[in-house]
Image (cartoon, rainbow, N blue to C red):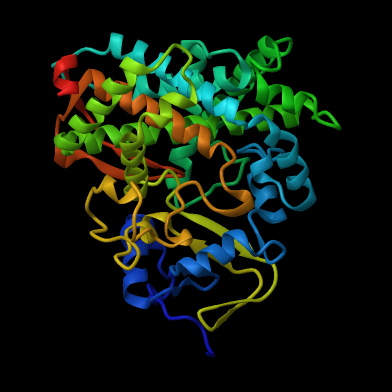
Length: 442
C-alpha cells in the first residue's frame, strides 16, 4: 500500500490542534472509528488501533521505537525528573530497570494488600456519612501513605502529602495546556511548578533520610536503589523516588475514585463486592497479604472493568527511530506513533457492549480480548513496573470501602473524565451510607 494513512485534514494553519485540545478523547475516538486502524492525526503523528500493531509497537520493537528522545529530555529537563528510569532509554534504561526490578516481588504485593487494607479501614473510620463529600483528598492521602510506606518503610505526613498533591496538580494542569512556554518565562504556572518541585525535593529527601537505615525488607525499593552498582547520585535517587511515588500515587488514587463512581452507578454490583469483601474479612487473618487478594476475585474483576473504561493512562506514544510498516503504510523515522487505551478499550470489535460496565467479562471463559486490546498499565518491557502492586492496592481498598459504605453520586451528570497525563474524574462528589454487616453479607 502506498501513500500516507488517511486522517482528518483539520484547519489549514493549525491542523487538528483545536479538535484534539478541545476534546482529545472524542477526537481520537472519532479518528479511529472513521479512518481505521492507522490514522494520520498530524503531519508527524500516527494513531494505531489494531491490537496486533499495538502489541508490536509496545512489546516487540526495541531498537525501532524510542519512548523519549534526546530532544524531549532536553526540553523537559527542568520541569520533570530526567534521570529517572521512566525517562531513560537504551542501556541506561535497562540498567535502571534491572536495578530496581528485584524489589517488586510477591512479598511486596502481599505487603501492599495488608497496608492498603489498614489505610482503607482507617479512612472508613474517619469518613462522614449522609453529607456531600469530595473523596479525592482523602483517597490521595491514602494512596500516598500506602506507596511511601510500602516502598520506603516510612509513611508521609499530612504536610508532605499536601506538597506532593500540589505538584501533581501542577503537572496535570501543564499537561492540559496546548502551549508550552520556555523555562525562562516567569509565567505564574511556571513559578508554581518550580516551587512545587522544590517542596517535593524536600519531601523526598526527608523520606529517603528516614528510611536510609531501615531494614531492607521494610524499605525494599529504596534499598534496591541505594545498593545498586554503581550507587545512584543524589539527583538520580531523587528523580527515581519522585517518579515512583508520583506514578504509584496517581494511578491508585484515580482507579479507586473511578471504582467508587462506577459502584455508585451500579448498586447491585456494589452489593456483590460488599458481600465478597465481608466474606473475605471474616476469614482473613491479620497480615493475610496475597491471600486477601485471592479472596476477592469479583472485586478484582470490577477493578479491571473500571480500568477498561477509565484507564490510568489514556494515551501512550513512541517515536520511530527507523522506518516501520503498519497496516501496509510505511511510517517514516521521526514520526510519533500513538496508541490510546481509551479508544482501544472501547472498541466493539474487541469488547462486547464496550460502553457497558460488565465485570463478569474478566471472570474467565471464552471471549477474552487480544493482548493488545487491553493494556491499562502498558505492555512489554516498559510496562508499569508496579502494575501488580497498584492493582492489589486498588482492589483491597475498594473492597474495604464498599464493605463499609454504599456510594451515592451527589450529581451524576457532573462527573467527567479529565484527560491530563492520567485520566482523572472531574466533578466527582459522593454521599456515603453506612452498611450493616448483615446487609453486605446477604
